[in-house]
Length: 292
Image 1 (tube, rainbow, N blue to C red):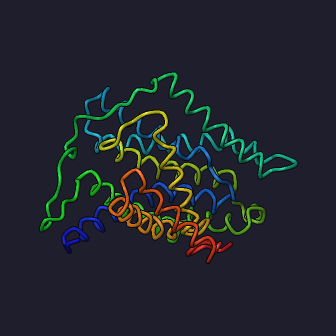
Image 2: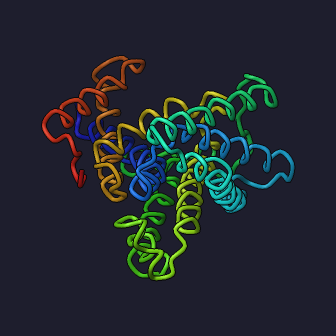
């Protein structure tokens, strides 16, 4: 393998890794806040991609310009799901963990079934975009502009997350609620409001990823499933509840996937991801940056 070929593999892996990290960040945020695993996370991604497609078809906007609308809609959806489903599941008197699992799992099945009914299982794609089909040539290393745009958005999103969590009242309320959801009521913090905003923020992060992926990936009702599996692995690798651990793990997953696709057949590229996941889980069960 030439040095140029290795650089191409690493660049491709890093760009996809940043998108994986963005998908996983929302999942990690919700888990760190509430100890709830959102098994409808892949369906949120699918809805974001369909929303992008729908806006583009209805308004002829470029997907890049449609992205803010999709992110806003996903934020509202995330907050609504908390108030409509998760808040009630958390009130269970027994087996609360299983109730939460089945609530989000059932939500995911419902969303997927509705998507198949409304949109049919047919594959769709966005044909008109300024970024689609374009690449940036850096000395023989080719970077697809949609993935490059997604990587830049991911970096900006993590910078914004840092300032939101570290420098805002909401971020401080988020950290306080994460530490002790019961005690925050004593200082006037409404934990339901914080939980709803946390779900909204987590869904908005998925909305960013979905609006980018709709440019270069086929859209169908099952599109979120493989990315949800990768997101679960990424969260486990980075450490449950560690948002910035998800960033490091996402980059690792992207690079391992790119290397696996080169060494093995493309259909076997996920083998490397799950292999390194098993190694990390056996050697460090709490993940690379976890606190469990």
